Length: 205
Ligand code: ADP
Image (tube, rainbow, N blue to C red):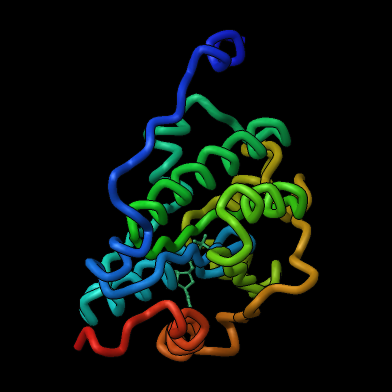
């Protein structure tokens, strides 16, 4: 591939600022909160709710959301296992860049494969990676069917649909597990805020 042929001619350029300087500037330590779960589990709803709470509290953060990223950066990728892996690799690299810029990142992707999430953890770095399983059951997700996708998948109109015709591998030891059929958006958000509290500077507000 092209990029492999040219990689040997690339030289890393160093910044004149440090991660610590960015920490002081933004009064926070970068972290990526990685949400994983079935379609309709509540990832996007929680991600944008948490983002609003953090911004309102004066924290620089950004949501990387599945559908949004597939509109642009990953518009060339489908849903085969290989394409899903590449989808996650690119997102993890973007999250890493955003963390390097000092931002708190919230990712909202089904990310169904354990190996892909391990890869994301490796790219981002364990210290800044927090895995959150949005563990709402398939039955509940299918009942909600907010985008009508389960109905289409059951009718055979969508192939390789996670939970129906493609696998979902739940995390074995997530930092947090949230079942949105048992807890409110507010309660789930509080638990995620508690998880990332060590990264937030209390002196900000
Ligand atoms: P995903 O991003 O995981 O595909 P969405 O956030 O798009 O899921 O959809 C989840 C649906 O479930 C939304 O319609 C949302 O309003 C609903 N919902 C009900 N209760 C909750 C809750 N406690 N947390 C998150 N979403 C909830």
